[in-house]
Length: 355
Image (tube, rainbow, N blue to C red; front, side, top):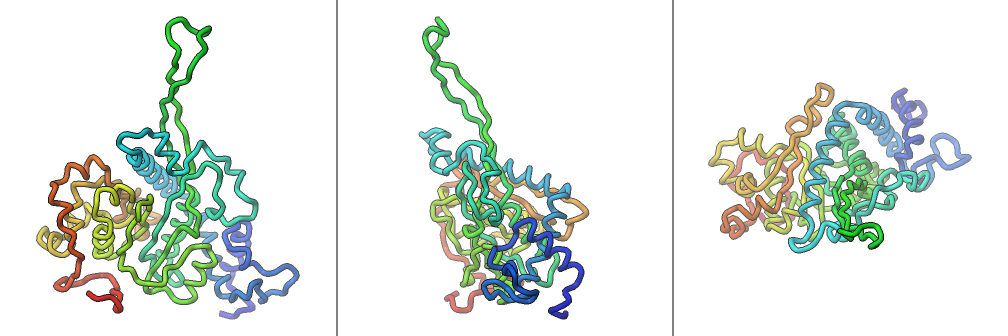
């Protein structure tokens, strides 16, 4: 491809990306500079590779899939939020701990800022970890999955009901001084892109440059999915990953407290249960087998437009009530998975780790 004559797709999407503010300011051509000169010394190819995300973004936003998927995810997040309150606390205290206030004014976003980078007042601070997106430079499916992640960080909301007492002056009533008010609040679940960690061992240096330019934080080590939530609400976005990666993630968070803090968007666990022989699931993917009765799962909608992109993808969360009902010895077994006798592991191991 000639550097001076990018194809029509890139020329078209370049305009769209600038209009959407999808890129870091350092990636835009400096004012007054000629074509081919880039502010901050960023290579032209990084600029060009970010362009298709604008068209992918518009496709997703206008699709039935996005509206249905967003509704499904919002529903799960709302239920998940309700369980984050302390057993003897109140929902208001839980909301305070999560920095979640009343409905945000989206106009408060700083003009020209990267979507999802500047926190809107009244947002909830979560973390996000993304594994296994793949080579989005060459794979359309991976590019749509990454675009979905960027939209998710920017657009998701949670709704919650609050019952609170409003004191009335004695002159208003002879019989009751307190009036219970029922209000539904909406809050933007906005995760700044710098609080979203991404990794795939297949990423090229150019793809890493693109991810950095989009404001995401690229991990430098292959964790094999072994990352703890560390007591903070965390969303794991892992579309079409190897089964061992999900199993490793569960092992790293194998406690009632940790699991109740996380949501997982990835391959359907129910689908895994149906496809794998019981003995294989129990032997090779022990933690998935043990958690099946302790989770809630909602499938993302199936549409013909994105059949190959989001098929077999579900949102999983772990209600405290269900976790508490698991046998007590469920938590006693915490042996790290090794997969020595596992065929078709479907993940790339970290060769520097002891297995």
